[in-house]
Image (cartoon, rainbow, N blue to C red; front, side):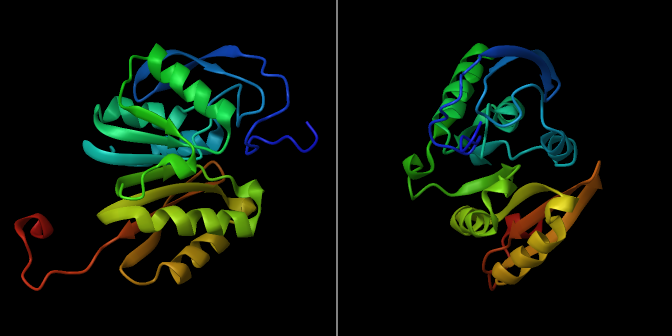
Length: 215
Protein backbone atom coordinates (compact mmCIF):
# COMPACT_ATOMS: atom_id res chain seq x y z
CA UNK A 1 0.00 0.00 0.00
CA UNK A 2 3.09 2.24 0.08
CA UNK A 3 2.38 5.56 1.74
CA UNK A 4 -1.38 4.93 1.56
CA UNK A 5 -2.66 4.34 5.12
CA UNK A 6 -6.10 4.07 6.69
CA UNK A 7 -5.45 7.57 8.06
CA UNK A 8 -4.82 8.99 4.57
CA UNK A 9 -7.32 11.65 3.59
CA UNK A 10 -7.99 10.13 0.17
CA UNK A 11 -6.68 6.56 -0.09
CA UNK A 12 -5.18 5.75 -3.48
CA UNK A 13 -5.56 1.98 -3.06
CA UNK A 14 -8.36 0.12 -4.82
CA UNK A 15 -11.65 0.45 -3.00
CA UNK A 16 -12.67 -3.23 -3.17
CA UNK A 17 -16.07 -2.83 -1.55
CA UNK A 18 -17.14 -5.85 0.46
CA UNK A 19 -20.00 -6.88 2.76
CA UNK A 20 -19.22 -8.43 6.13
CA UNK A 21 -21.51 -9.77 8.88
CA UNK A 22 -21.36 -8.01 12.25
CA UNK A 23 -23.23 -7.82 15.53
CA UNK A 24 -23.29 -4.34 17.07
CA UNK A 25 -25.17 -3.31 20.22
CA UNK A 26 -27.06 -6.60 20.11
CA UNK A 27 -28.17 -6.12 16.51
CA UNK A 28 -26.91 -8.37 13.72
CA UNK A 29 -26.60 -7.49 10.06
CA UNK A 30 -24.15 -6.70 7.31
CA UNK A 31 -22.04 -3.60 6.73
CA UNK A 32 -20.07 -2.37 3.73
CA UNK A 33 -16.32 -1.94 4.14
CA UNK A 34 -13.50 -1.29 1.70
CA UNK A 35 -9.76 -1.30 1.21
CA UNK A 36 -7.90 1.73 2.50
CA UNK A 37 -9.85 1.91 5.77
CA UNK A 38 -9.03 0.49 9.19
CA UNK A 39 -9.85 -3.21 9.75
CA UNK A 40 -12.00 -3.75 6.64
CA UNK A 41 -12.54 -7.50 7.17
CA UNK A 42 -13.91 -7.56 10.72
CA UNK A 43 -14.54 -5.52 13.85
CA UNK A 44 -11.03 -4.82 15.15
CA UNK A 45 -10.07 -6.59 18.38
CA UNK A 46 -9.45 -3.31 20.21
CA UNK A 47 -12.79 -1.91 19.09
CA UNK A 48 -14.50 -5.09 20.31
CA UNK A 49 -12.81 -4.72 23.71
CA UNK A 50 -13.90 -1.07 23.90
CA UNK A 51 -17.51 -1.89 23.05
CA UNK A 52 -17.58 -4.73 25.59
CA UNK A 53 -16.04 -2.72 28.43
CA UNK A 54 -17.84 0.61 28.39
CA UNK A 55 -21.20 1.50 29.94
CA UNK A 56 -24.20 2.45 27.81
CA UNK A 57 -23.63 5.83 26.17
CA UNK A 58 -25.61 8.88 27.35
CA UNK A 59 -29.16 8.77 25.97
CA UNK A 60 -29.02 12.21 24.37
CA UNK A 61 -26.80 15.10 23.41
CA UNK A 62 -23.77 15.04 21.13
CA UNK A 63 -21.54 11.96 21.16
CA UNK A 64 -18.25 11.48 19.31
CA UNK A 65 -16.62 8.50 17.61
CA UNK A 66 -13.11 9.81 16.97
CA UNK A 67 -11.37 8.01 14.09
CA UNK A 68 -14.53 6.22 13.06
CA UNK A 69 -13.28 4.04 10.17
CA UNK A 70 -16.23 2.27 8.56
CA UNK A 71 -18.26 2.93 11.70
CA UNK A 72 -18.52 0.08 14.23
CA UNK A 73 -18.38 2.41 17.24
CA UNK A 74 -20.63 5.09 15.74
CA UNK A 75 -23.20 2.50 14.66
CA UNK A 76 -23.18 0.85 18.09
CA UNK A 77 -23.61 4.16 19.90
CA UNK A 78 -26.35 5.29 17.52
CA UNK A 79 -28.28 2.06 18.08
CA UNK A 80 -27.93 2.33 21.87
CA UNK A 81 -28.79 6.05 21.99
CA UNK A 82 -31.31 6.77 19.23
CA UNK A 83 -32.06 10.25 20.60
CA UNK A 84 -28.41 11.33 20.60
CA UNK A 85 -26.54 12.92 17.71
CA UNK A 86 -23.48 10.79 16.96
CA UNK A 87 -20.56 12.48 15.23
CA UNK A 88 -18.45 9.99 13.27
CA UNK A 89 -15.21 11.87 12.65
CA UNK A 90 -12.31 10.78 10.45
CA UNK A 91 -9.79 12.32 8.06
CA UNK A 92 -10.37 9.45 5.61
CA UNK A 93 -13.04 10.45 3.08
CA UNK A 94 -13.59 6.83 2.06
CA UNK A 95 -14.31 5.89 5.67
CA UNK A 96 -16.86 8.68 5.97
CA UNK A 97 -18.62 7.51 2.81
CA UNK A 98 -18.82 4.00 4.29
CA UNK A 99 -20.25 5.30 7.57
CA UNK A 100 -22.95 7.19 5.68
CA UNK A 101 -23.76 4.10 3.62
CA UNK A 102 -23.89 1.83 6.67
CA UNK A 103 -25.98 4.27 8.70
CA UNK A 104 -28.50 4.44 5.86
CA UNK A 105 -28.56 0.65 5.46
CA UNK A 106 -29.21 0.20 9.18
CA UNK A 107 -31.86 2.92 9.30
CA UNK A 108 -29.85 5.16 11.64
CA UNK A 109 -30.55 8.82 10.95
CA UNK A 110 -28.75 10.14 14.03
CA UNK A 111 -25.18 9.75 12.69
CA UNK A 112 -23.29 12.71 11.22
CA UNK A 113 -20.14 11.61 9.36
CA UNK A 114 -17.76 14.57 9.21
CA UNK A 115 -14.20 15.69 8.67
CA UNK A 116 -12.64 17.13 11.85
CA UNK A 117 -12.84 20.73 10.64
CA UNK A 118 -16.53 20.32 9.77
CA UNK A 119 -17.63 19.78 13.39
CA UNK A 120 -18.94 23.14 14.68
CA UNK A 121 -16.75 24.66 17.39
CA UNK A 122 -19.70 25.14 19.73
CA UNK A 123 -20.50 21.40 19.94
CA UNK A 124 -19.61 19.91 23.35
CA UNK A 125 -19.68 16.15 23.71
CA UNK A 126 -21.54 14.19 26.37
CA UNK A 127 -19.28 11.26 25.55
CA UNK A 128 -16.32 10.27 23.38
CA UNK A 129 -15.41 6.76 22.32
CA UNK A 130 -12.32 6.06 20.27
CA UNK A 131 -9.93 3.40 19.06
CA UNK A 132 -7.35 6.11 18.28
CA UNK A 133 -4.87 5.80 15.40
CA UNK A 134 -1.77 4.99 17.44
CA UNK A 135 0.34 4.43 14.33
CA UNK A 136 0.11 8.06 13.21
CA UNK A 137 2.93 8.72 15.67
CA UNK A 138 3.12 10.14 19.17
CA UNK A 139 3.08 13.82 18.24
CA UNK A 140 0.08 13.44 15.92
CA UNK A 141 -1.77 11.31 18.46
CA UNK A 142 -1.15 13.76 21.29
CA UNK A 143 -2.28 16.65 19.11
CA UNK A 144 -5.45 14.76 18.24
CA UNK A 145 -6.32 14.14 21.89
CA UNK A 146 -5.41 17.68 22.93
CA UNK A 147 -7.87 18.91 20.32
CA UNK A 148 -10.86 16.74 21.20
CA UNK A 149 -10.75 15.82 24.90
CA UNK A 150 -11.20 19.46 25.99
CA UNK A 151 -14.46 19.42 24.05
CA UNK A 152 -16.00 17.03 26.58
CA UNK A 153 -18.92 18.55 28.41
CA UNK A 154 -18.70 18.77 32.20
CA UNK A 155 -19.25 15.46 34.03
CA UNK A 156 -18.66 13.55 30.80
CA UNK A 157 -16.27 10.77 29.81
CA UNK A 158 -13.92 9.82 27.00
CA UNK A 159 -13.22 6.11 26.57
CA UNK A 160 -10.08 5.11 24.63
CA UNK A 161 -8.79 1.64 23.79
CA UNK A 162 -5.06 1.14 23.24
CA UNK A 163 -3.04 -2.01 22.75
CA UNK A 164 -0.81 -2.66 25.74
CA UNK A 165 2.34 -3.27 23.68
CA UNK A 166 1.74 -0.11 21.65
CA UNK A 167 2.15 2.21 24.61
CA UNK A 168 -1.14 2.21 26.52
CA UNK A 169 0.55 2.73 29.88
CA UNK A 170 2.73 5.61 28.67
CA UNK A 171 -0.34 7.17 27.02
CA UNK A 172 -2.22 6.92 30.32
CA UNK A 173 0.63 8.73 32.07
CA UNK A 174 0.68 11.43 29.38
CA UNK A 175 -3.08 11.90 29.60
CA UNK A 176 -2.91 12.26 33.39
CA UNK A 177 -0.10 14.83 33.14
CA UNK A 178 -1.73 16.76 30.29
CA UNK A 179 -5.28 16.82 31.65
CA UNK A 180 -4.55 17.24 35.34
CA UNK A 181 -6.95 20.08 36.16
CA UNK A 182 -10.65 19.15 36.43
CA UNK A 183 -10.00 15.75 34.82
CA UNK A 184 -9.22 12.25 36.07
CA UNK A 185 -7.61 9.44 34.06
CA UNK A 186 -8.09 5.79 35.02
CA UNK A 187 -7.60 2.37 33.52
CA UNK A 188 -11.13 1.02 33.29
CA UNK A 189 -10.43 -2.46 31.87
CA UNK A 190 -7.77 -4.80 30.50
CA UNK A 191 -8.67 -7.54 28.04
CA UNK A 192 -7.03 -9.44 25.18
CA UNK A 193 -3.88 -7.32 25.34
CA UNK A 194 -5.75 -4.01 25.29
CA UNK A 195 -6.33 -1.31 27.90
CA UNK A 196 -9.50 0.75 28.11
CA UNK A 197 -8.69 4.21 29.46
CA UNK A 198 -11.32 6.54 30.89
CA UNK A 199 -10.85 10.30 30.89
CA UNK A 200 -13.45 12.05 33.05
CA UNK A 201 -14.05 15.78 32.84
CA UNK A 202 -15.36 16.91 36.21
CA UNK A 203 -15.85 20.62 35.67
CA UNK A 204 -15.79 23.32 38.30
CA UNK A 205 -17.55 22.22 41.50
CA UNK A 206 -20.50 24.37 42.47
CA UNK A 207 -20.50 26.15 45.84
CA UNK A 208 -23.90 24.62 46.59
CA UNK A 209 -24.32 21.19 44.94
CA UNK A 210 -27.29 20.85 42.62
CA UNK A 211 -29.58 17.85 42.69
CA UNK A 212 -27.92 16.60 39.49
CA UNK A 213 -24.47 16.79 41.10
CA UNK A 214 -25.70 14.97 44.18
CA UNK A 215 -26.74 11.97 42.15
